[in-house]
Each structure stands twice: as C-alpha cells, then as structure tokens.
Length: 320
Image 1 (cartoon, rainbow, N blue to C red):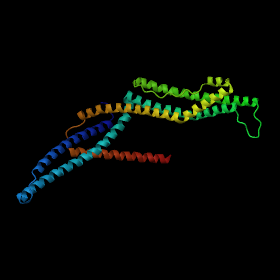
Image 2: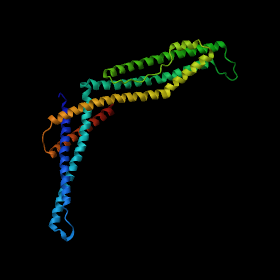
Image 3: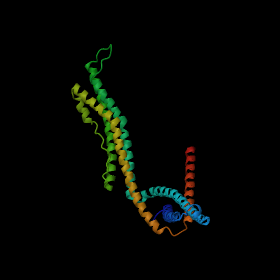
Image 4: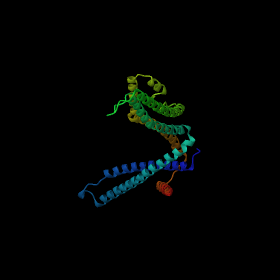
C-alpha cells in the first residue's frame, strides 16, 4: 500500500496494541482459572490445617493476585495507548483521504457547499427586513395616517408618496431576487455533487418572495387591495427573517451532518481494510512489556510534538 510513513507507523502501533491486548486478556483468563483452583483448595481453619499448608495456600493466592494486578495494569496502559493511536490515525486519515479518495473529497466539498449556502441565505436577512419595511411603506403611502393639527395630504401628495414607496419596493425586490439567484446557484452545485454520489441529499428550497411583476401589478390595484397585498408581503418577509430562516438553517445543518457522516463511513471502511492489512504484514512476535514500553514512548513523543506545535502557534498568534 502506498501510504505516508506516518500512517504506516500508526497502523503498526495499532496492530501491536491489539496483539498485546489479546495476549494479556488470554493470560488474564488463565490467571482467573488458576485463582479459582487455588481458592478451591483453601485449607480449613484451626487445628485441622497445618501452618505449612496455610502458608502454601496464601503464597499461591498472593502470587495469582499479583499476576492478575500486573496484567490489569498493563491492560490499562494499553487502553490509554489505544485511545491515543486511534485518535492519531483518524486525524492522519482525514488529512490523507481528500487527496486519495474522490468519494471522501466529494463529501467534504458538499459540506463546504452547505456552509456557503447558509452564508448566502443569512445574507438575505437584512434584505428581507428591507422588503418588509418597504412593503409597509407602500401601505402607509396609500393610507397615510392623519397628523394632529395638520390638514390631510392632498391626492397629489399621496400619489407622489405612493410612487416613491413603490420605487423603493422595486429596488429592494431586485436585490432580494439577486440574492435568491445566488442561493439557487449554490444549491445547484450541491445537487450536482450529490448526483455524483447518488445519495439523494438536497438542500432546502427557499420561498420565492415577490417578483418585479408583482410590483407592477400592485401599482395598478385599487387602494384597499394594494394595501392588503403589501401587508401580506410584509408578514411573509418578517416570517422569513424569524422562524423561517431558523428552520432553513436547521435543515441545512442536518444536510451538512449527513455529508460528514458519509465521509466518516468512507473513512471507517478504508480504516478497516488498513487495519487488517497491518495486522497481517506490520507485526511480529515480540515481548509484550517491550512493545508496551515502545508504544508508550511513541505516545509521549507525539504529545511533546503536539505541545510544541501549540506553543509555536500561540507565539505566532501573539506576534500578529
């Protein structure tokens, strides 16, 4: 297998960890059986058993218990090593697979597309608020509220205010349709990636909002109907900015999680193949204590390297 040296070394450590655990568990099972046999020979108390018989029993039992404790200590060490090496292998494979597995790379790309889609959707929030504001402005221009101690506006002023409000509404709808187009383009990119994987994942569909043709129709409606239409538009826009946007982002988060899950499945399957290969090719019969000492050194060296990297990164961040 054409693998980086780092991954080969980690797979070898994992294989040795498994072999040592199997060997120690077998030894522990033997000790448990021996302990039961020793306990079954417990001498009676008092004058019925000689001091020599009791001494032999106690010595045998103490030896079995000591051996059992030593085995459990080694298994505890290996458990910690196993956690470490599995975490290192997973991180190493996550760095390696994007360049070697098209399917894994596609899963990551799809997750990144979901994030871009979310950013594009969130950018619609302020424009949708502007849409709600401008729709309310149209309703207010058609039915202006009387001001205290002031004459009612003339029909000419009302018409001028209505035209300004419609102009503002038209500008905002152009902006929101442009934003929707960007969102739809990103959604198409995601659909193309998922079609390649044939997993059927899709990003949510956004509401259509209002088009410029609606503004033109609104301009020709009688006052009462136009007001009702503008009020509905405002309600829809505010609904999107509140619960609607929240639901969309929840749905997209589920889609992104599905992308990560698919990538994790690919990684786990590949890892199983590597593990089987490593156990067949990367290990040989060795002393368990020698192997545990070596694995412990590898773990310690990895921790030192990690801390050094964190220290250097912190220094670089401080210099900035």
